[in-house]
Length: 309
Image 1 (cartoon, rainbow, N blue to C red):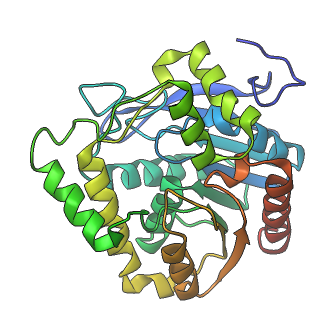
Image 2 (image 1 turned 30 degrees about the vertical axis):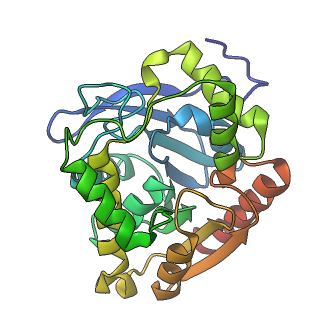
Image 3 (image 1 turned 120 degrees about the horizontal axis):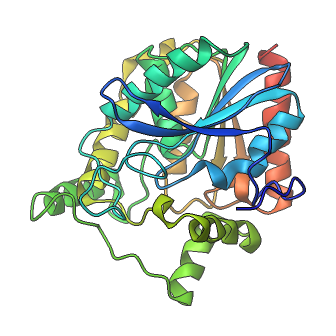
C-alpha cells in the first residue's frame, strides 16, 4: 500500500492511524484518525457500503484547513465486522445498533478531541447522524448532512417501495442479497453514473478494493432495504425534528437516483436551524467532478467558519 503524500486519494497519510474501536457489545469497528488540527475536530461518516478510504481526499482537505479528522466504517461493512453469512451482502434488520455505535464512538471521541466538534454524514450516514441528533444521543456543535438518506428512490413511491421490500424480505431468507454483484463494464458504468460523473474518483474505490478485498461490500439484503424504507419514514414523521438545536447544513443532489431528494428538502424545512444547498449532481457530492465538489466544500467551509468557532 502506497503512502505517497502527493496522492491523497490513494494514500494513507503518514500521520494518520487506522485502528480498532470496540462497541459496547464488543463489535469490532475500524476507525481512521488524523490528529494535529487546531480548529477543532470533524467526525465523518459514510454511507451504505462505504469505506473511509473513499473520502481520504476530503478528509485531507479538512485537515489542511486545520481540523483534526476521524472516521469509521459502520458495523457490517468496510473493515468492521459483518452482519451477514455472505460477507458481500450488507445486512441489517434494525438500524438501532448503528445509532448505538455512533453514540458510543462519539462519547469516546469527543472526550479526547478538542472542540468544536463537527459531525458530517453522507447518505445512510446522514440519516444516522440526524437520528442520533433527534434522539439526543450525540451533542454536536455543527452538523453537515450530504445527500442524506431520508427516503429512498422507488418507482412505486415510498409506501409502495416499502411494502414491496417487506414482502420480499418475508418471502425467503431476509439476509439474501437484493441483487447480484456484477463487475461487467456495463454494470460498472451504470453504477458510476448513479454515484458520480468523475470516472477517476469512481475508479479510486476499486483501487482500494484491490489493495484489501475484505473491505468490499456488495448489494444490501432485502431486510436492509425494508428497514431503510421504514426507518426513514419514522424519522420524517418524528415530531422531535423541530427541537434539533444543532446548526445543520444539508447538501442535496438534484440528480440523485438513490435517495429521495424531495424527502430531504422537506425534512430540512422542519429543522429550525438548517440551511439547504442544492447541487446539480449525482449522489456522491463530495466525490463529484471538481466543479461540483469544490462548490460543496466551499459551502461546508463557509458554514463551519460561521457556526463552529
